[in-house]
Length: 321
Ligand code: F6P
Image (cartoon, rainbow, N blue to C red; front, side, top):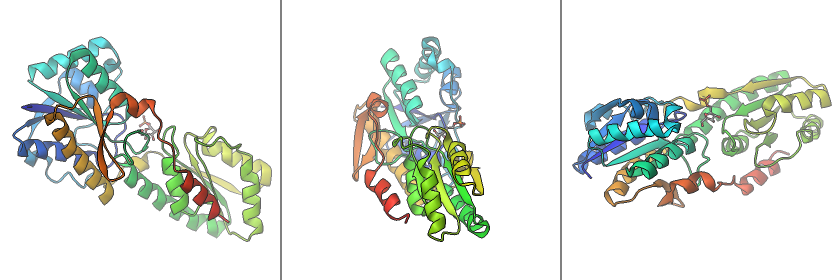
């Protein structure tokens, strides 16, 4: 392997810069040149390439966002778009591509590999933690911290006004962020897409909270739960008549300086991705599972589903009395 390319794609996640840095510096250590592709697959299709050396990634480890920029590309979904991207990679003498992103990005990378025989390695970068084949994804820990900080603040104002706060967190179709935030933030109830309990159950929860003398209630809702936070808040307002506010945390959960766990995970996985290409691996995502590096075929990362922790779900219930 002489030259590898790296890109970030899909929603940005805190720690992506740490992963890019790890790829660039591991490459340099191993005598491999690293080409940075700007704007994800859009930039790959247009040939937005630049060689990156160790100093180009200095002072980036602690920064949120992605220095390579990111995009969700429509053109890449067409065989013509992918053929143009493959031609640019060939012109630049690239032997392998490292894709940092989520399942949509892995679809794009896998299609390139299958159609044009360019080895692709995936690095899990998404706040959603929804990829099979790794315990955690880069950005997840930071997103949980950010959401938790907001929940703590909302609890202050909620308790002062004796209001119910229904807080929506990101996670796309998964409830990982919601569950962690619910337990760490002491929520009265949590709604996740993995459990289709009816929204009306919240009415009793809130009534009980009031009768137990709780000053306010925090209800966490994953964005993927049908109806979202607004649906839950409507059910509370109709069922109890209590003063209820909705707060949708939104994209702030994607920003900010990555916490140490994300920096470390990103550094390890970026390094491992270069070694994987050197070992002749292709079409796999590098992950960390139970403290070990794992290499999961890219299609499995989106075909198999990663369940939420049922123990944690039970814990959230137990402690909410
Ligand atoms: O995948 C990351 C994520 O932030 C999801 O949690 C969310 O559903 C989605 O991206 C939002 O996407 P966009 O940036 O296109 O609004």
